[in-house]
Length: 374
Image 1 (tube, rainbow, N blue to C red):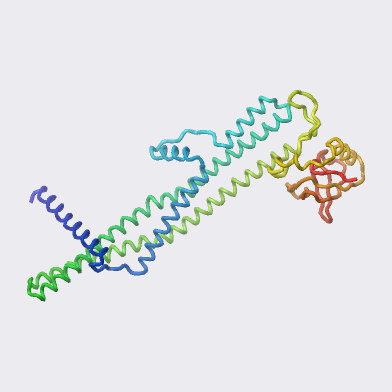
Image 2 (cartoon, rainbow, N blue to C red):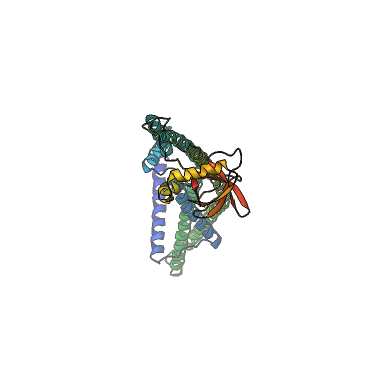
């Protein structure tokens, strides 16, 4: 037999097998043929694998959106990844904002109140941008890559073996159908007994192949539990990366807040003339938007004068809190808007702070958050 004859016979056999499976599958769908059911344990494993694949894909895609909200940037990164090339380095949003702030601050003049504040804010935004890059890189390595490896590796292998199992089941059921027909024909003396024997042998072979493939598939599916354990460790790594990122951002903003809050009450304005508007220390970003609406009816000059007198005296006064303040450390006292506390000065204290008391609690409070009461 030459190679051409062998290939022709193989193609014919494959075509026959494919046709047999197609007929069996169609008859099962029409309810005209019996179907061998998988055991309950294997069915549960298959369901667990499908569920794992579905949610892994959703979590992976949404994590990518979280880390890179720009869809165009995600597409670009995907293309470069497929081409096995490194994507060009570009500024992220915080870095770009930071650079704009720094450039604007230098344009307005680093010696002006606004220019100096812009430069400090810009530097902080660039630090946040660098922390964001680190979060993306760490999350990609420790979280997204293992999830993607499961989808593109382990689950593809499971899918391949499951398809083989489906084909083996169709072969088995087709053989059972032929055996059933052969026995009916034998009873009617339409065929010889050896045809029944041949069909019985075919059922035994296909049953053995089906059982072997079911065992292979089962072993692969039982590995899903190990996959869950591995993904749990990756999830912990992702959470730690987020914790590090948010802790860095909080510290950067806390440092920035203190820098802005330590500005002198009088700055040279952008036209180099004296300005009497103080730069206020803030505890949350929302206060920046609402500070102007929260100012007391007393003029700034009166408030500043009263506080200055208190700084030089040894007595104490009652003061109303203008807006909320979160203590940065244990030496400071948190404040709630509209509450009344006792304030006084102690020697050597920074000019922008007073000591505040509320019952048994005491700590430093920023002057710009207070309105002295008569």
